[in-house]
Length: 227
Image 1: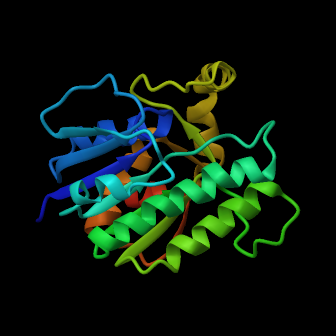
Image 2 (image 1 turned 90 degrees about the vertical axis):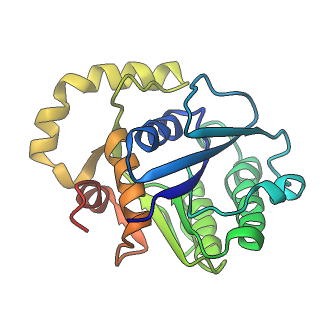
Image 3 (image 1 turned 180 degrees about the horizontal axis):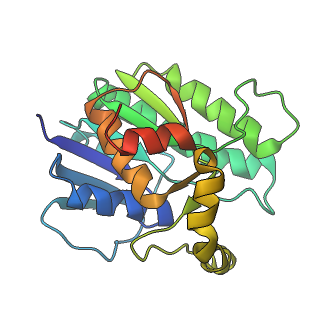
């Protein structure tokens, strides 16, 4: 089986770092290219990092974005306390800047975008973040990649010591951790983990899933390599 050369956006964040760790551990990943504004605190022979400051324009580094099999786009920001224009600028504009550059250099790749449960692809709902995420999903799907998958996890339990940059979220995860095994038994289709998301992305890149939009249940299924 071919080994993957992957690109990760957002590897300094909680979910992106978790995906990165799974790529390092996976025998199916040959290398991982990271695009960050500041250096990540992980060193490994599989990793190569590009420090790039302007996330609204990747044209200056396009020549370095070749020969890639998949992109895992985990970059994002909370919508709490931010207006639609600012949220759209980060969520939609940055994502589309990245996809446009990648289409010029790697149109035959698999692009995986982390969205969320409740995303509104009609783009007309009352919830601001859901509309913006829906508009972003629609744009990615229409971009023309060989394969494009939208990940819509519900609750995500951090694993392997992964922590959020947000102190409040870390506190919530610590409180929830002892109850996760019970919750997973009660409603397993609505929960997943950072580890499963990373494994799922790798597996879906190797064996495309029949759905474009993956729920927590779909993520868990593909993480177990049963897709």
